[in-house]
Image (tube, rainbow, N blue to C red; front, top):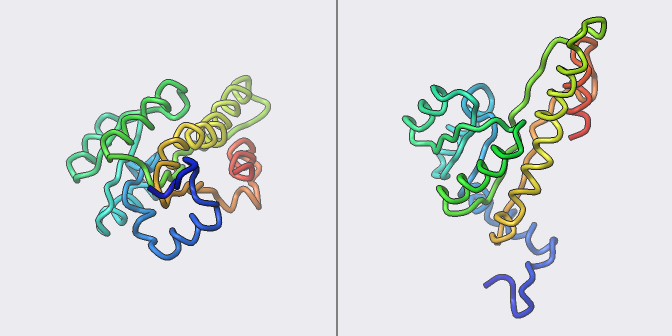
Length: 178
């Protein structure tokens, strides 16, 4: 057991060395949010091709079914919903036999005009999905990740976090926050 006699994980420096010396250990059991299309889908398929066990989530039943048909573990979940977040982490860890890597990829971007009545609600939704959800999912996944000798978390951001565009202020702020 890597925890030794005191029940603690190795020091952070020692754990990092483990991941660098055995990078495949980091990508053995992976959960990718927003992994049913776009960048998340491509990443899931690539990791699967290297032998990783990969779970993906999405809001669409059809997209999740397609992921399952390709040998991925597809889970219907909306990362905006706290209950779905908990269920997602527990289901993925159960189906994969643990977690070694959480990839926070799910995001939403809505064109916002602040002179419209709906802009405040749209902005808050983007903050919940693009910033709050990755932080909450990471906290929920932490106990599962800490069980591993080599584990990690990735946050997929955007250059819009550094060079924002006027029509997506909440998205850009959330990506900068990550």
